[in-house]
Amino acid sequence: MEEKYTNIKERLLYFAKNQSIGIENFLENIGMTYGSFKGKAKEGSLNSNALVEIYTKYPELSIEWLLTGNGEMLKYYSNNNAIAEPVDSNRKTKDPIYDIQRVPLFNLEATMGLVPLVEGNGVDEEKVIDYITIPSMPSCDGAIYASGDSMYPLLKSGDMIAYKRIAVERASIFFGEMYIVAVKLDESSTMKTIKFVHQSELGEEYVKLVSHNQHHAPKDVKLSQIAAIGLVRASIRLHN
Image (cartoon, rainbow, N blue to C red; front, side, top):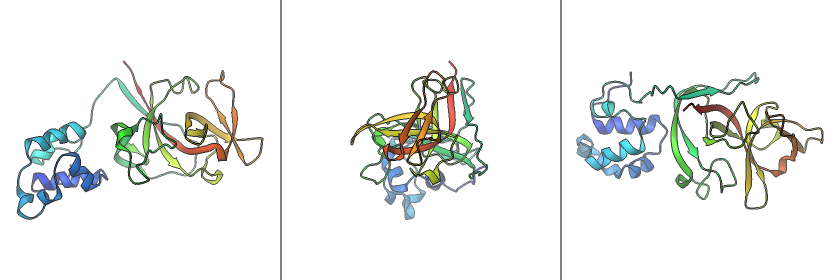
C-alpha cells in the first residue's frame, strides 16, 4: 500500500514525483500553480476544475487514494481484451525492472526520431496520443502502433510496441534482437520500421534488417542512414 500522506495536495505532489512527471508541467496540466502548494495554501482543498483535469489527464491515478489516502495510488485494470507480453530476448544482460511506469504513446508520422522533442527540451506533447501504464518492465522511452505485416504473426498491424531508445552505433546493438528503426529517406523525413537487426555481410558500415514474415526480403542499410533506433521491450495486443 502507498504511503498515506496527510492531505490531498501532498498526495498529488507525491504522485507526480513517483511517476517522474515534472512538477511545473504537471501543475500547468491541471490548471494550478506551485503557489497553491506552499505554506497555509498547501492545507487547502483542490477545486473542482483541477479534479476534472486530473481525472481526464491522469486516469491511472486512483481518485479514492487522492481524496482519502486509502487504497493504492494507481489503478490496475482487469481487461480480458488486452494482453501485454515482454518480447523474447536472448541477451545475457538484464536491465532493472520498474514496478510501474507511465509510457507515452506517440504518433511519429512526421518526425525524424523516436522520441519527439520540442527544440531538444522535453517531449512534444502534440505527438503524444495517450499514456499507457506498464507494470514490471525495464525502462521504456515510448510506444507506437505497429503497421504492415512484415513481423506477422509475431506482431500484427494495430499492436502497440514499447521501446527503449539506444545510440546509433554498433557497440549499442545486440544483434538478433527486435528494434524499431527510423531510416532516413531524405534530410527531413524517415521511415519507421520494426525489424530484427543482424550483422551484414557488406561490412561494419551496414546492418541487415530482417522481417519475421518470410515474404519480406532482408535489406542491408548503412548505419549512417539510421536516424534513430530503439530496442523493442514489449508488445501489446487488443483482442476484440
